[in-house]
Structure formats: structure tokens, C-alpha cells
Image (cartoon, rainbow, N blue to C red; front, side):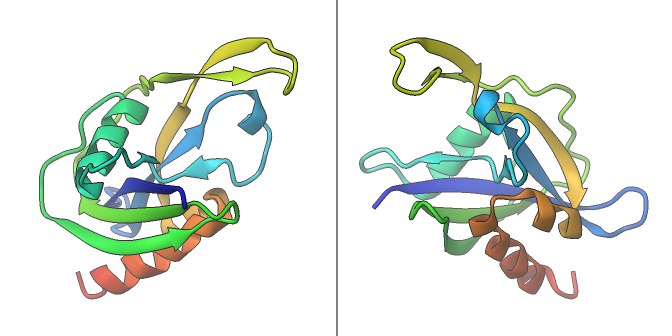
Length: 156
């Protein structure tokens, strides 16, 4: 089974104190106009790699900056419709700002089966959104991580 690891940053809104999370929009033409085209920054575990190390590496590759340091909480795995499992870690990141997303790129075949490949950014946007907004944006299989986050930070 395919397993990824991701790092979900959260903070209190500087405007109203509500809980916000940092989500990333998946790049390339396939995701351009699709609903639920946002994700927790994540990537595939490499053989023998520690899941938290993967989550931190993938965050830096997809967002273009290192995630801040601090205590990390393991929320466990969520499962996407494709069957992919995503191990989600959360990190409080008050004051963390992404001025510009500088994602790594991947090659995709367009159109599928054509033998023609183009290079696209893995992520083309990232932003802080409320948990309610994230519920509408994230791929459906990752929404469970938001409920786990809320339970973990209750009373925080």
C-alpha cells in the first residue's frame, strides 16, 4: 500500500483568534479547475525513512521553505479514496508566513497516453484557511485529519 507523510501547520488567526491550517493547492492542469484540489503538504515515504523526516522534507520541497521548528503531534493515518494512506503530523506555527510558493516540479504525461510529457509544479499555491474552509478544499480523505486536529487542540 502507498503511504505518504505530511505536515499540517496550524495557528490562531491574527484577525479573530480562530483556528487556521496551511493547505497547498496541487499543481498542473489536472487540478486547475477541480474542486477539492487542496492537500496537506505531503509526499511518499522512501524505504526506511522516518515518517516525520518525510513530512518535513516534503513540506520544504512543496512549499519552498522549511517548516518551523517546534513540538510535533502525530495524528496517525488517514486514507484517501485512491487507497493511499497519509500519516499526518501537526505543528503549531503562529507567525509563520509563506510569501511565495516555490515548489519542486514533476513530469506528467499530457494528454494521458500521448507519450508527451510536461513539467509542472507539484504545488502552485498555499494559504492559511479556517478549518471550515479547509473541510471544503481538502481532498475528501484528508478531512478526518481536521477532526483529529480539533480534538488535539481543544482548550488550547
